Image (cartoon, rainbow, N blue to C red; front, side):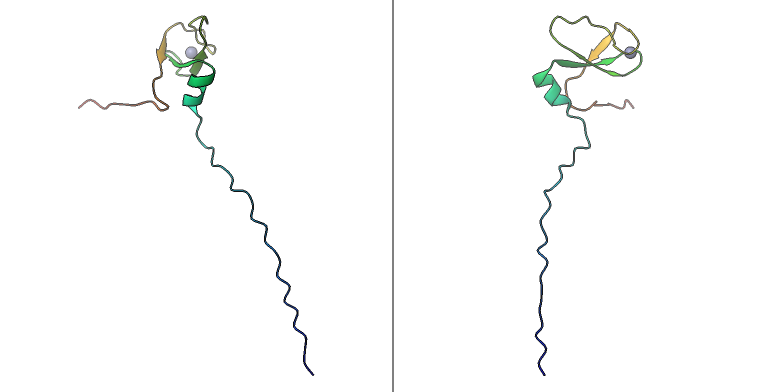
Length: 78
Ligand SMILES: [Zn+2]
């Protein structure tokens, strides 16, 4: 007796590749919303649009440093 072997192949649906969005896109905010600053007091990120008051929204500090790149470049002085 011959056994009819039925090989049922389960079609594995390829899941959509999930984008690894682990990093915040600072550059995108710069283009769309405004300019990013870093508070000189609490180091929190502050996004300001044109005409906004230069002030930290977290602590109210009024000295903000401009962020030019998407990551803070740190130079180590020897
Ligand atoms: Zn602050």
